[in-house]
Image 1: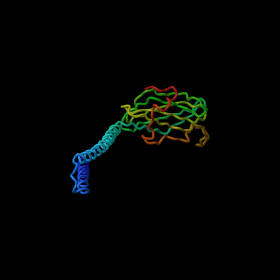
Image 2: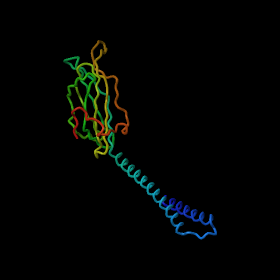
Image 3: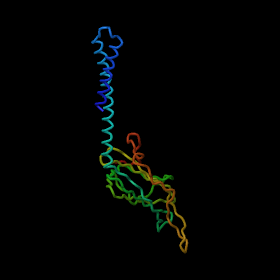
Image 4: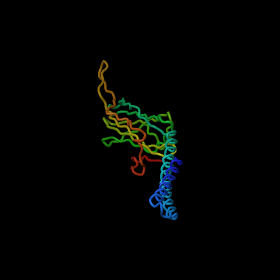
Length: 220
């Protein structure tokens, strides 16, 4: 690429000199004017080359950074929730969640929240204390008890171990009880309307400066 720029600049200079000589072949050449024109052409090409290489350098740095980030990038995947009825109260539905880090790098989970459409809070029986680090290949368990049928959203925010990028993932589902039959009718807990957040890593990326902290659990 540098050789190409040099050849183009040289060609333009030669064409400029040739044009001056051709237009006025019997007129003494004003070499000061020629030098001024040549200098202006060289300055233009120098500026263009500087801008071009500055852009190339910025792209190279970005590619190197993204390549380094890919080696430590976490990717959290929600497993299907489980729902069981309480033995003492059929209205209480025990909900068990798990999320696995299937990415090559650890996830630093710094914020989380559990919400229901009705506004009622789940009684959390296993609520991880944040912040925490979820290593690659490891699974995090979250458990709670919903009082009656509930549409539940669980949201987690996390960063890569270097803290270069922040991400958000969420799972949404409806926990309810229904009649099942196996020789006799009996009540069971079940899950429906499941959304396990199949977005890509790029789609999960957030800007912490432009989002509100989740309800009271933010620690970093």
